[in-house]
Length: 210
Image 1 (cartoon, rainbow, N blue to C red):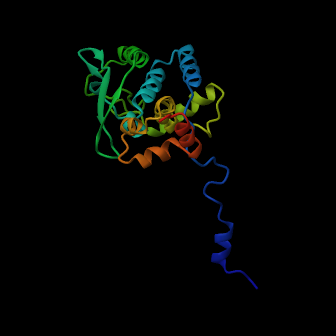
Image 2 (tube, rainbow, N blue to C red):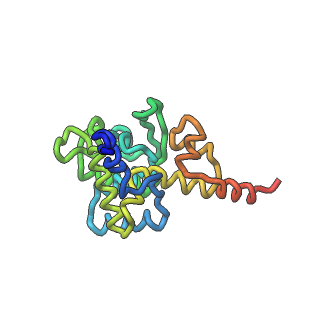
Image 3 (cartoon, rainbow, N blue to C red):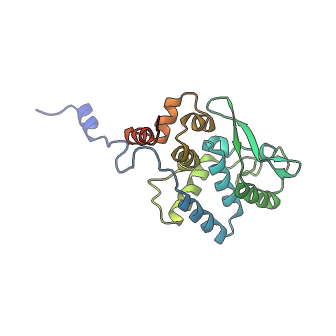
């Protein structure tokens, strides 16, 4: 019996994720963070080093990171130690810290970049009045991770967002703090985002004496 054309189309349609790695992207380890910094420093890529450091410290989604303006991180000619931005996805403000490494690389980049407080920190190279696109940001992350020998299928922009949050969680086990830092409305979202499983929960329980 001949199969209807619609059924043939359905059976031959490729699976959307064929050949792709599915699931959350891995967070970077401290050693990998320094490898990427060294890689960017060796190539004198001031913009990329500043972008990488800001991504790690801010823990922002790519769409929020690329839209940051100079006035968000600069005050009185100095890089702020803390900054606050409005999240595009949630419409809520989120505050984050900028540690010495990030402040130094951002200052070096902005000294070269110039601009006013109303300009984007990372302008588009196509339209200087616009900001770096999220697609270009993703391409840069692919370049950075492959440049230090990591598989780009396992890392992406969310790796940078997750990195510091994961390190803080591993060091403290404080989910509530991580939830606040990531700007999640529900702690369940933080649990899923960090990929916390039963083994993590048991390890925390075993290390807690009453």
